[in-house]
Image (cartoon, rainbow, N blue to C red; front, top):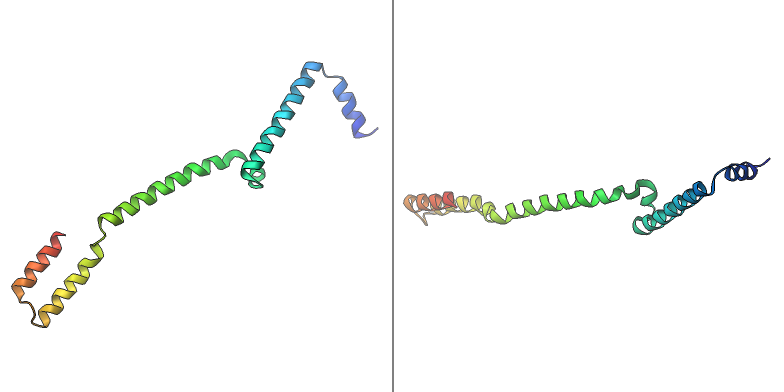
Length: 112
């Protein structure tokens, strides 16, 4: 007796409605596999449709990246403050500007 004989006896004992439901479930499984495999490739076998959740995490990552970019744009001259403060010191050392002018420039930088 082979495995096919056992399967044949097993199938014969089922009513036709149950066999129709099993056939429909098998057909649905094949269709879902074809759609998932065509959309996600071999990763569908490993992860299934859980990859859709990865898309939402990517959206969250892009949202946080956008917030970081906006914070950089708001303070895009911040890196120049230290340079200008050093430049004011050099101009004072070279006697190009006096202490009063340096104080006004430093106050202006502090207000930026």
